[in-house]
Length: 396
Image 1 (cartoon, helix red, strand yellow):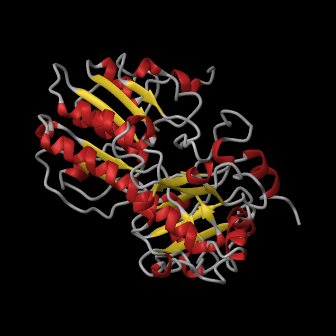
Image 2 (spheres, one colour):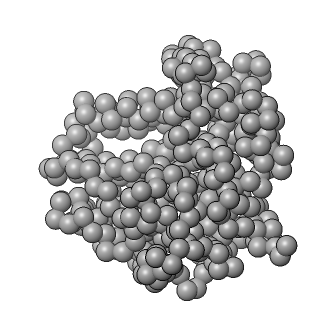
């Protein structure tokens, strides 16, 4: 790798430099410039994910039931789900799905006493597609009991600007799913995959609780993106919305009182927060954009100090504070939602003059200069940056 990002001092690398055992198991960086960089991990304590993220089953019919890809064919290889025999991952390590394997590696580390402090990143693939899990997880969600998501609204696209409508619909997944009567089947497979990975997370936490490291280990639990399941006629991420940008996020620090905080924070805050809690020097290679959340964790404040920024596509940014989400696209189109009254972002208030001051206040936090792309080729997961640039802002 030759990109600048391959040369930065990463979070596990920072801990390794400060004398920690650094371990990484599974889906962590998920970036071609960082994923194979074992410099950041203690020798023998790194096992990256495999692609495709699936088991090798001798019977292809059991391994996967494939839903053909979207009309754009961008996800034809991945957009699928399958059913494994119910005993598939119980005993034979050769048959385990990789999330089970990575949980087992992390559990083994947590059960041991160590002569040095440790940093371990355990990255699970699920509920990313393909949604292939043993039968018992699908049995948790009978098809007849599955409802259409509450955030779905048939005319939800009508007040969206053209770039947002393009992002929502250009892949064609929702049209395909509805046309073929697959909405509930997709939800069943998605929910089953969540339950599968939830069980792996529980196994890891149980091992920490039962082991010798429970009283002096900080836990960060986070996802990497949200997910649409038909809302705004959209499936997956690739969208500047609450559903796509919001993630599960929790931090547990020994000795700190549990609390629920509604303050929007960023995944960029993980690095400076852990560095601050563990009293490590900042990285030598670059400045951190995130915020140290230690004072929020202690209950001293609920103020991050600034709203959270999300970006998708050059010049297209979304800013979220405690109440509003404001999005501006490169062509000047806008969205504004009041989350005090509009959880599902059904009512775009950007054109309402009563909220001009809100837009002005949040616009201060929009970037004025966008960094160049690391590379200008179709990214992983079918995220075709060139197509976004060319088509979303095409003149009628």
